[in-house]
Image (cartoon, rainbow, N blue to C red; front, side):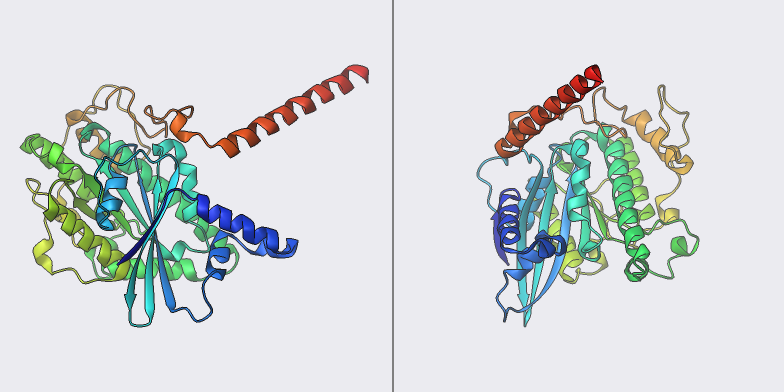
Length: 375
């Protein structure tokens, strides 16, 4: 592997701006950031295959740590919180083909979910893999976080597919077929239409398992069954990871390398569905019969439906065991830990431009008010 770390997207946008200045107005409309980056490649460069990996999850869930573990970046100090959308990439050369993994991390929790649109576009959606990171050190927020990001990813992919179909593209259909084949076209749950095929690969990572390991059998069982249900329902892979357990990290690397670079997994021996152990289940290797039904319980006080009856059957027992904490992120998309005025989110150029535009807007309002008064 060869790795290049870019802190934020500043270099990409600077390069795009310089390219745009040198191009004609007509060219500016046709070129986007991706095309400008591609145009910088030497004429006799090797064939390149790109995969865009988007890491999402609530703030502090462990996204940065997982990326650093994947690219084997040494961290002597704890990583700083990701402020918006940060980028790095990894390369693997095979014969005359260079396989590039573009790693995008969406910071800020649910509050900045719109930045997902920067990574998942109609032009590159066929290269996208989404990694949802759930924080097991805060088990009470796992259900709402995983459900929130699954629905957001599904919505964004649907928007891209619609735009592509309006242009008579047959790529969405091919992507659905590709995921069905990966899941297993003869899988009984697929044949019974119980599984939602979004169209892109999804990996659910339950991070910081070491902080949850000793919670007790009943807690572990409810957590495992719920996450297996989510993963299987959306044709996703699922893995538990512990930052301090190199065996878990090695399994995470192996699974991500399999999904990104096509590296083989070492057989069925890695499969783990025992709730007393760190789970490892990849796409199509589970069944609803093996997972079993949710625990039958009455809905807890102040229960809020998610709008899906089947999902509510799983949400009720989960929130009976893991009562949502007051002020935690919920399905409304509001992350109580997010503060837009946090200095970590400061962008001097953007802030100064915002100030100028605010002044122009106020002058316009005053001008309109004067005209109204004299007419």
